[in-house]
Amino acid sequence: MRYTGDARWINRTVFNFVEVPFEIRIRTAGERGKFKFYPGFKAGFMVENYHKWRIGSQEYKEFNFPDLNRIHYGPTIRIGFDNIMLFGYYDMTTLFTNDDSNKLQLFSAGISIGWF
Image (cartoon, rainbow, N blue to C red):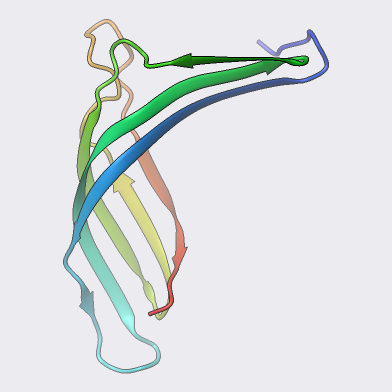
């Protein structure tokens, strides 16, 4: 349902992680036109989480959800040419630990631009 109250309403949920990645780097020889394929794995720990919302000039924050799974791990992949690559990550753990909670799993995808 859409909020129809005060003029401005912002709703945001934030999860911050410290992660350790591991990659196997496979690439073709040559300076230009280099194809790169980097399968990998990463593990991380959630160091901060909060839910933030604003209604009018009032701002509210709720910290530390009670049933969050703080340890996360899963496969990663990067594939591309030269300095432009597509990346993806799939979290193999669920976001919440309670059996009655939603079985949400995090994922990310995007484009990375590197110097080397």
